[in-house]
Length: 550
Image 1 (cartoon, helix red, strand yellow):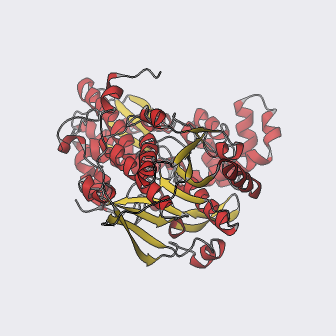
Image 2: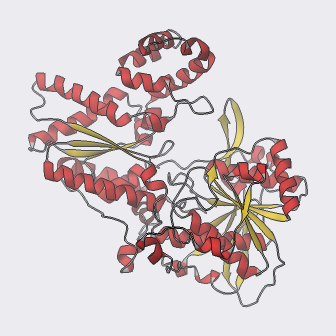
Image 3: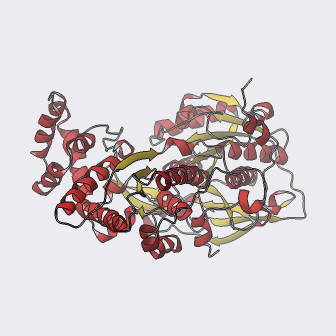
């Protein structure tokens, strides 16, 4: 028997709020034929069986529909995000409502469970243990990519043996790209296996006109914002430290932006802005140092700086350097491995890259340069989450301020503290918003399956309205696709949503930047509230409200 905290026990009684259209009989409404967001000819050619399908909306209906009994498989894919258990709960309950004889199989450890035929039957007793809880531990997750035909055939073989005729893939943009590829392959082989995707990622970069936000983003940002607020309260109390806080978000800065809107720190770096301005690392450091110096003139020798973890890859010179390092370290892996000292390794690598990149490489603090040479991921790329960017910036700002002090441009004190908030937010107990949203996504996925759809992503829209007014449905995954270069080859992938510099969330930050920099206007959000008035417990993110003009 699982040992539970008082909060878990209390959350067991929480009944997720749902769109009105999912609480009774449902009518399926088909919209216009869709096309991919870009590269239409290429995407249509690659996905002839699943391209051009209409967006679907579920509306309240008057007729009762009878659905045949089926067996459905579900996997959790990629990094964890708060609310995954409620997607499975909603999927389970939705399937039971469609037909009490329906069965749900949870494949263990992510996509590898599909290939290795590792699964558990998800019963009501088991599902009930995980309702409204964080984490993915009900069936686990994994990052195995399903890319080869032999894997596809093995999945078909395993599903046929179990009698599974539909799969639900809960994941981010890469996982749902795989879902789209699987749906197309199964359709081309007339396997009779449907594939439905569910949008998950705390990074917030899986969103578009039909997916307003990915699940987990709300809870993760609120979790990080609580921690940031706690640190800001400490900073405002001690008045002697600058806290440099690195936040998850390799490809996009949505988390850093949302946390800034929630907490109003003195400095927020947005990777997309750094790239657009073509900033150098020194220019970024100078901007931070100037704010520190100006605050010192007011007697403020403390503050907070928010940093997206992927910012180093958005600095043009650093992006080029990292790309060259990836190539060199892959090509000369054995030669580098036999060198004993980090200095020898740095010198060797510097001799193999371009003169411009070598100059940037040699200008970096030794510990940071060492990090760039180590910890490659399975694809040979640097693991950005392992790079302590916050410590790099602290060291470089300190050096910059020391020079400014000699020139009479800085008269204050500077002491930096570094933090990284990552895993703290991925498995938090889901907020009411994520608990409701994820449950609705699960029920929506069950209806898409019951209606015989494949190659669709579950969608719930109108998310700033009360849950009863949310609009569930489904969108063809092909409409989100474009062609991008991956490992040297053009491949169809879901287009990532980066921070839009002309969007309302970023403009809100830009409009308040000077005020937040020069004053101590910190906001202390406190912990996520699960019980109490709706204006406290059910709030969507600032990002979502601003994007929808609320």
